[in-house]
Amino acid sequence: MSERILTGIKPTGQLTLGNYIAVLKNLRSMMDRGECFIFIADLHALTLPIDPEVLRQNSIDLAAFYLAAGLDPNRSALFLQSSVSAHAELNAIMQNFLYMGELSRMTQFKDKSAKMKESAIGLGLFAYPVLMACDIILYDATIVPVGEDQVQHVELTRDLVNRINNRYGDILTMPKAELRKVGKRIMSLSDPTVKMSKSDPKGDIFLKDEPAVIRKKIMSAVTDSGSEVKFDPENKPGISNLLTIYSAMKDISIEEAEERFKESRYGDFKKAVADAVIEELEPFQARYKEIVANKSYEKALRDGAEKASAIANKTLKRVQKAVGLLQE
Ligand code: TYM
Image (cartoon, rainbow, N blue to C red; front, side):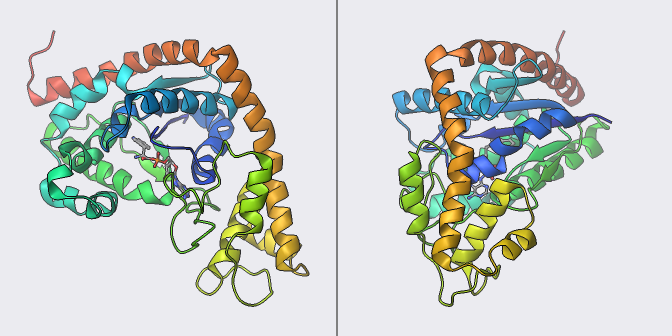
């Protein structure tokens, strides 16, 4: 059976190597496995304060990054979440089927809201997983490729699908999160015990970083005591993270990477990691620049929104009918 594959990225900051490894690097193989719906989660970007011009620019950047990574708009749908109104419409229905208790247990909500005053936490941040569940459900997605931090949200979507199907008959498709074997959680280069995230300039490799900057960041990445290049996340989190990055770049197993560097010192190993990342990102950055200049993302987004709307509206109708809303 051909799969329905759906995934999205939030246009909230500079994209990182973590985003690249979780999603962008796999786009080509995803398209060989089934029909792909790939989107820019711009409504989700509004769940934390963001400047309108920054959001607009980030959304364009992200569209260009998807295309630069090999997304073929003729074989898949690339679109802005906000340009397919079914997301917001389904959200209005589904918010009644996810509950305060389970939403307040979401790690992402707990992490993000912990740093905020209660009076500044928007309802959208709390209800974030409802909209994300709608993103997935609307396309009858079977596979949702994500990094580890998003698995909890996909699990909640599965609970919702069960809940709705038990109550209204089998109207929704059950999705499944899919993680990369290597690289499901890329850690910060400056503190390898925390995740690399869009808001951590020191520990991040940004997809727009110049090769020289990438090299400098990797060469000065925090490493561990000892001198052996060995995968041991507990005792050697820094080296293990670099081994993960290398393996993900080269599409090899961690064991294979360990074997390659078993005689190496940290300095030589880091140089090889930097080479591997630059070798992959340099041509990608060149394609990105070309796409930004020729604006080919504009047509891709228009066509994608049309393709996506056609599918999403069908699911929306099915749900509206099932819950008792009167629709033509
Ligand atoms: P976002 O924008 O935070 O991240 C995009 C994707 O990158 C993955 N990721 C990582 N993977 C490995 N190591 C890291 N350090 C790392 N940092 C980020 C994320 O897990 C994600 O797969 N809620 C989503 C966007 C979204 C979505 C969806 C995704 C909205 N609706 C529906 C899938 C399906 C988010 O904020 O991802």
